[in-house]
Length: 386
Image 1 (cartoon, rainbow, N blue to C red):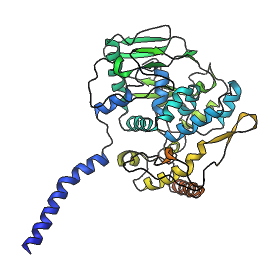
Image 2 (cartoon, rainbow, N blue to C red; image 1 turned 120 degrees about the horizontal axis):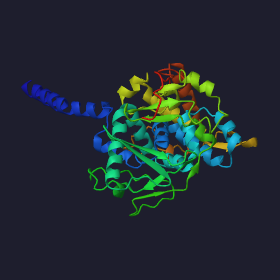
Image 3 (tube, helix red, strand yellow; image 1 turned 135 degrees about the horizontal axis):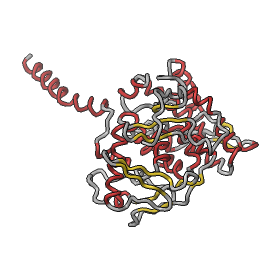
Image 4 (cartoon, helix red, strand yellow; image 1 turned 180 degrees about the vertical axis):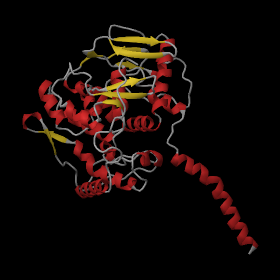
């Protein structure tokens, strides 16, 4: 009896020591500061207007995948034809806005794990994300690698110091290309080097800072409604921004979805499209309990192929099921991505059907989450540059 009791006591002691660390690892919604620096270093020096769109869109990784494929298949659409085609898509406006920046959209699609981490951090630690970007900008500025050029205007506000990056011309946005291991000087976290995230075709070298070809903003930029509120530590929305660029968007529809069209950005779980959240706290915050994670993965497998679309007559795409038959990709050991085996091969038609049924079931059980379609935006607009 004594020996049995000793075994039970030893087992309970071991469990008591291990369990807190396991719960902490699985339940903590926060990233460490070195992790935030690591993931944000590649985009911290982007112009504010583009950066805000990336941060919002990263919380909808599946729609980023769909939009990247759609943009590649419809690269010849311009002007009013592009506006008409985009208006028929149900993606979040932040995702639609990135169609105007195909290289950025492709980068987010190809570096999906990174995109998902940025989105997870922005959801759980929005102010910390904004503060980290400002600290990184300050480092680049102190090193002499962030300055006003013919492509961009750098404004430094004091008390407190806020660095704003704007296009030199509102009609043309230049996306910088830079090597984070060079532009920020000595990196403070050698164990957490910056993510190797670069626009397609960029070869990292010793040059600290350069620019790709400028993007003449057009139809897709009409959805670029985000504005970095650096003092408030968040992103604001104004659906009337960029009206001079695109007058063909039904802004009244979006104004209704955003409760008047102005205010703080809020995540809309409906546009998450079944991709599970990183932790229980975030899932519960958007009315997505932990039991939904299994349904999320099945639903994702079923909806992933919706991003593969073939051009239809007139240039407007219609979804087409192109799932391959025969083999289902196995998830690799240790893969914690919410996307499972998405990038490792085709899904069977049977798996796709199961996914669609799971998604319908999830939606029927309260899938819309907080605020329903449109991601309600609360509070009045803040007006003026922050």
